[in-house]
Length: 154
Image 1 (spheres, helix red, strand yellow):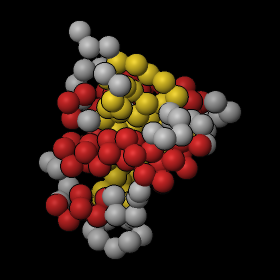
Image 2 (tube, helix red, strand yellow):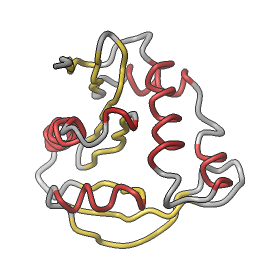
Image 3 (cartoon, one colour):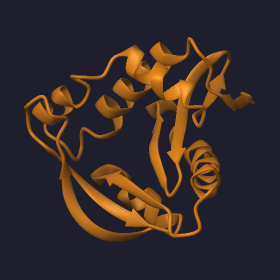
């Protein structure tokens, strides 16, 4: 049995978190988004983008054999990011990370918790009690096709 370690993200994890995000989008979202949407998804992001998020102090990573395989990030009232490698999906790790993200989102916030779910993740969030509020699009501001999302609330 492989042990998965959950820990706060730390400086220097940015490249691994970037790599998880990119691989997750390519592997898990391709059934719901076009090649053009997937290609543009990460355009303006870099490892430094994730270093800045890590510095904010609310990101938790999941490590398997010393390698980051998933992460969650949150701010008051919102689970902002949750990504896993495809090999780590379906093992309960996403549920554990979501639990951590919800707890972090509740810190300093008394209202509902929101998430902007990708189309491929809607069912996952629904199984955890989130309900759709509205459908919309996310555009990365660098051109390319916008990405359909569902604003969901717990």
